[in-house]
Image 1 (cartoon, rainbow, N blue to C red):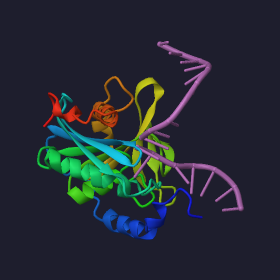
Image 2 (cartoon, chains in turn orange, cyan, yellow):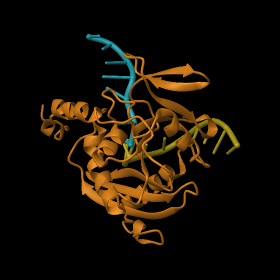
Image 3 (cartoon, rainbow, N blue to C red):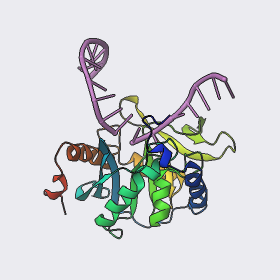
Length: 230
DNA sequence: GCGACAG
DNA sequence: ATCTTGTCGC
């Protein structure tokens, strides 16, 4: 059955999962940052097997875009729920390095943090690899049960009962899933993201970066070369 | 065996 | 994520 999943045949799923279990041990769920002045945010869009990854640098709390970089690559890993980091993280990391790892205090990633089967969603993966504070913001749930606790909806591990993240109600009743990536607590991650909700259902940095990745995909690879560019 | 399933 | 028509709501 050599059908359409050509990339799947090249993937060692068990090896990837073992690596996640290793990295998960290095996740820190305590606030390991001081004052937040700069925030990095990453997202990507695709055109065929080409990925357009954008990393934006924003001031905080003003949320002004100060700089952004674009990375264009060929994808080498298929999308498999739970293994998203192996598909997208390499490009995000490359973009963040170009942005300057010392230029931001925390990074926001489009995807989950510890709200993941092995507690290592893409946000945690990136946070551990770069040894930086990170937060995962997802539009849909991947893992966990939603349980109301003290006026808030927590994402809880169905097997251990551990809290993994929080559901954040934003605009027009829309909800997003916030979970710690690394070096931050569930509550701090939630509060920080909540303060970044402006006029969209996504936190402003994510909305802006998402928009840029789509521009890049539509033959506008110079989006980061403009006023806010390098 | 049957759902669930980030982007 | 991407593709993709018509439809619903502000």
